[in-house]
View 1 (cartoon, rainbow, N blue to C red):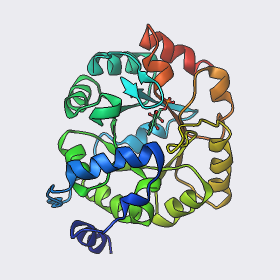
View 2 (cartoon, rainbow, N blue to C red):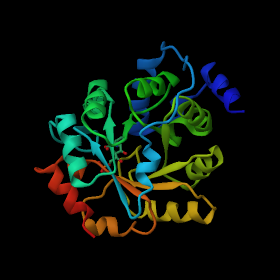
View 3 (cartoon, rainbow, N blue to C red):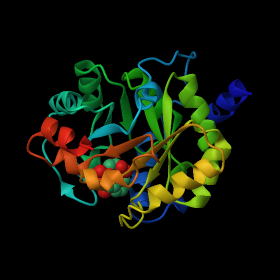
Length: 270
Ligand SMILES: O=C(O)c1ccccc1NCC(=O)[C@H](O)[C@H](O)COP(=O)(O)O
């Protein structure tokens, strides 16, 4: 079954990315053009190592700290050195690191991921807009432990991409923003679900989205990990998801601070 899914996806699941609206739609269209002629071959199965999933399973609320130099909502955030930033986050108590590799809007690149994987012992998430199997193969080749899969982008094909990620030894953070997307993630067999408070078509943030969808996932019997994402700036903000989420993903507020390790420690204060 798993091999069948991987084979089908490698052969090319036809996805209509033109249905993705707004800011997200523009970024996705660029990534589709970037990878349109890439080789979809995944190669042999790889073991999962330096597990992202294990790092987030610690008791309490784990932090995924993001190396984020720029974004569509903020413009330039900070000219971070990725390895130095990741070391500071690690020293401050982060459980895992997210690295944006999208170049045009987030000032990311593959070298940033390489540098972070080499500098720290924590698992690293490749944060990008995955629209092609080659992007997962790259993530594994570059030493990432996990990749982001967005239901808003992949739709029901997220299940096939999940199988491909696992085939490559990657955990997957399957991201949702609404009830329908959550149902697709649950149906696909996601093990780690991220609820993004940011509407990626309008960039509007609503911190009530994560608690609502996390409660819905648990009510549906989901026993995997749940991650609250985006818009968190203070310990009080995190208080709302303590006891509900297993982890939070924080980018802009940490990346834009003057002392990243201290900002990480402060954010995690209960
Ligand atoms: O951050 C953006 O402006 C953005 C715009 C369009 C697509 C994705 C975007 N961000 C990706 C993320 O989800 C965040 O980087 C991540 O959750 C951290 O959010 P924050 O702490 O608010 O920087």
